[in-house]
Length: 265
Image (cartoon, rainbow, N blue to C red):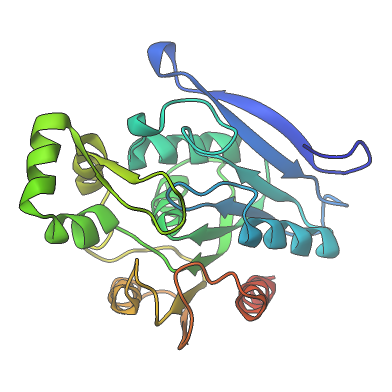
């Protein structure tokens, strides 16, 4: 996975108990010095992994700045164990909090892409309730998809998809990013309702920078505008990229992400 001289440490963390235990693969870059600054934490999207372009570029920025950087794969994703169909927002949030807890830091910056933006918003809520948890210094949300199950998926379900959810417990749809179809389970959708954040004031207590493409066919830019309405108490910057798609992985998009992270330092 990494060269012997590479400072990145690959490890596996067991999360969950009894029949729910699953191995979570992590990649951790230690800070050059303890006082360097916040740890950067990558939170990927639905069916993505910690070796994608944006995750790698976040890690590269951390290396240049001497910062700690933490990446991991949710269960059912990438190099982690567990079945993808068992995945829910609560399950992936539990893994996120466990991985952060296993890599102590005084301050962190959460960088969440797509579904990772939702996980980031839930994580900042949960960390705020935990004594001794790291302070979230800032958040960079890239094409964030909070509440996507109830806001984007459920309203667009066809009759056939609703029947499939009821009879089979899931439905499939073609993916433009993979030859394998996307699978959305009834458990994911039901759990998504319990993790909604677009229902009242979201208090992150930190600066938030949102990057959103206006040609995003997966998460329309209007969704980012809606998210802004629920963040009235924070210092929030929204950058709309007129020709940007959902991935926002072009060189100019990476520059925007790195500039947003750097501004939080």
